[in-house]
Amino acid sequence: MNNTERKYLDFEKPLEEIAKKIVHLQEIKKRKNVDNQLQITQLQQLFKEKTKEIYSTLTPWQKVQVARHPQRPHTIDYINGLTDYFYELHGDQIYGDDPAIIGGVAKFRGKTVAIIGHQKGKDTEENIRRNFGMAHPEGYRKALRIMKIAEKFSFPVISFVDTPGAHPHIEAEERNQALAIAKNIYEMSALQVPIIVIIIGEGGSGGALGIGVGDKIAMLEFAIYSVISPEGCASILWKDQKAVVEASESLKLTAPDLLKIGIIDEIINEPIGGAHAQPQEMIEIIGNYLEKQMEELNSFKLDVLLEKRYLKYRNIGFYTQGTI
Image 1: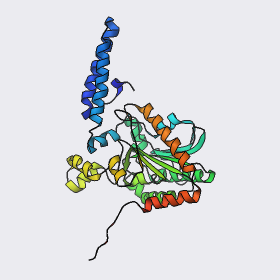
Image 2: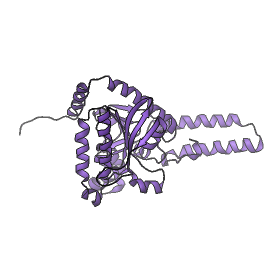
Image 3: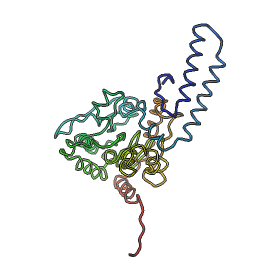
Image 4: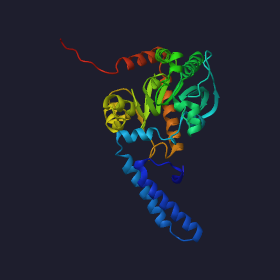
């Protein structure tokens, strides 16, 4: 992506100013045939150095903003960038289709796989159509239908998580939102094929868990994963939505925090400046990770795979015993 096409976050404003200077010098060079390449090269190097500086010290709230960046690659971008063939499946065979979740069967580096994932929009119009990646019950049932097809034909499952949460409104509750999510968690815990889950942006509450059970759970470096959004947490605990900075720190929603407490298995490093700055490089990194993990998981016998999955979730968390 050209740096001038990027949408810069508030804390990225120094980068935007450097990018504008580079463009200005490039226009002068082209229009007036001035030899200013040395200045351009110096500014390009400054841009890289400043990017490294900013992204090495991001706060949890800043990481939330990066995770939500509209130019981060979404599920469909990974599908288009990594697969030679994708046959999308629609509907849950009960109610209807849910555009907030996309899924189907694909060819990934010579192997047939099932892919499911939340799909946000690139702009306001698509976000409205996709409900900002917040799935209804039929979306989770569609995902389960695809996973059951994968199980029947022994295809590994790849799941991309990117949602603020499941759709919270009354129509979703009327169609059994909680049951749909719970059933997916139950079925995925015993699905008889390898499952790789990657949190690519936001991993919000039960909306993430509905397609988030797997043998390997990875997070992109600047993704987030939490029981509630910082805004929701601030509103409930601080009674003030402006307390998002404090809420973000308290929720321990960043990849390093979650790796430390054993919720995820691995952090996938993003390119310099985040996935939104270099989406094609991010897609390639994800592809290499998936290929490696599929090779490892396919080496286990099914009973061993399922036992390891069981123990993985059985061992998450800790408790203390005492007397009353």
